[in-house]
Picture 1 (cartoon, rainbow, N blue to C red):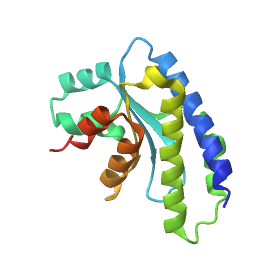
Picture 2: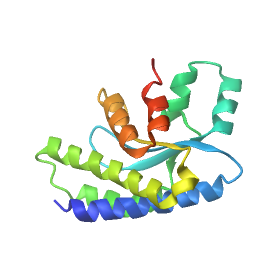
Picture 3: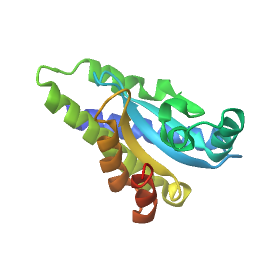
Length: 166
């Protein structure tokens, strides 16, 4: 498997996508950013939420505040900049998935590392943005989110995220 090439493409796509996101939402405060995949690991996409979008959602539907704050499927920006990820998703489609557990572990690692590179490159611009990796509709999502958030965020930011349910 060509994980070096996938990782490089994923870092580049993620950085481009975040730069575009920050430019498009420059009048809002992005507080969370996630790379996500599904249980089959077929592709990678990005989601983000802003304080303004979160508050607007709560004003319309004052339901589970914690869920809406941290569930990428409910965020104002989901599947952001799909074109930026087309190359990496094409590379993923070509990968041998016969040892799926190994494939999936490598994918989660590549996604986590890509977010770390984005946060490092953009520094202060993302200092207050919680970045994590997730898997849609997966029992493993919370564990993957927690590990990636702990790796990709300053201790205080990661700590708030890790305590989100308790």
